[in-house]
Length: 214
Ligand code: TMP
Image 1 (cartoon, protein in one colour):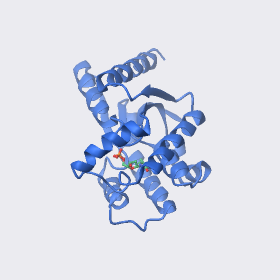
Image 2 (cartoon, rainbow, N blue to C red):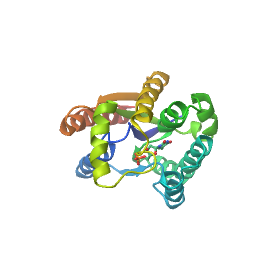
Image 3 (cartoon, protein in one colour):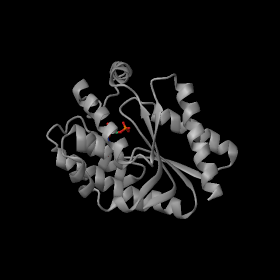
Image 4 (cartoon, rainbow, N blue to C red):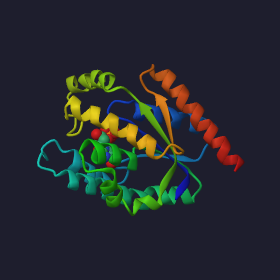
């Protein structure tokens, strides 16, 4: 079931999602829209703790299956504690990553398969976003941005995967877009950040107008 007002943002590493969500939050505040911003894995205490386990650079032994299950566990707690209550209160939820990340990263890039990841996330399938914005950044462009992160010493366990992995994630997202064409809107993330933000705002405004007219 798609949940009204639940908007998720997807993309590979360094796609600019976090900055985009911050910009949207500023605009929503100005317009007096009732909203929350949150992220996966994380957003609440239990899920942030799970996030730390998953992204710990020392956890090199973590099996792909366990990685998928931990993301699913973090997701369910986050849904119950944060997303579902906000939906019930009629808020707009701007969520950095959701199920599509698990499909692209664990299902495709880690090779577990889409069906296995959907099974691992069976509880969450009852709570799908109403709109997903995918920021499409070519792996080469993303890699350049990641090199800057590296210089700042800010890379986590998944950032530290090689270019091959990130290319797989990119291909994974192309598969996910084909799976959910009605829900996922693609924005060209290779453009300047201001152009990306412009495109995203247009999609969101159209969505909000449609929602109010429904
Ligand atoms: P972030 O860097 O966007 O905060 O996301 C944390 C990392 O977790 C990022 O490398 C993507 C990854 N991830 C998955 O592999 N599967 C998932 O289901 C989610 C939500 C994130």
